[in-house]
Image 1: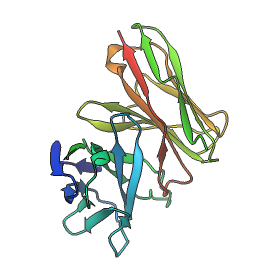
Image 2 (image 1 turned 135 degrees about the vertical axis):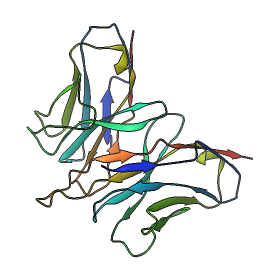
Image 3 (image 1 turned 90 degrees about the vertical axis):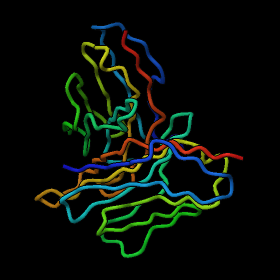
Length: 120
Length: 112
């Protein structure tokens, strides 16, 4: 069974500083995907960044980067130059690998989330 | 683009009542999902569908039924609501099982 662990219930960061949100995962699959989603206080889920298990380079999307360490089974999100609007809940999620027939159904397993608060 | 739209946004039910949550997507996605979000537990998969006319159980399917009669719609039904089903429900869709999922805005359901 897959498992995602986010050990930081809450994080605080000063505006314009960088922050790292931790995510470790457990899976026996060789092919899998890792996602980060942002959930602001309004409640919607916003896709931020994706890393495939076979991707050799760390994913980047603007101020977001994913520090992927496959051997350690970690997929930490790094937010550079934090902004007040970054205050939100952040979820790490893993997409299951393929079944015996080679099909991936896209089912996501989520961590418990980290609440990020950006101070001015 | 509307993306993924959930109806209703809020609902209060009495124990034993039934209701249907509607998810509609306008992106022509094949795959659709229903998740529930409870405090401290992240999101958990209830049911999913890999195409029109197909449905399958997720991690926490008990007490729910689903239907995918049209490609763009995925319905989640509660036949006899229980207080344990108080939660925020999210619908999501994706092109395939290997592409990012787009989420609806959520439905906050309270069962009293």
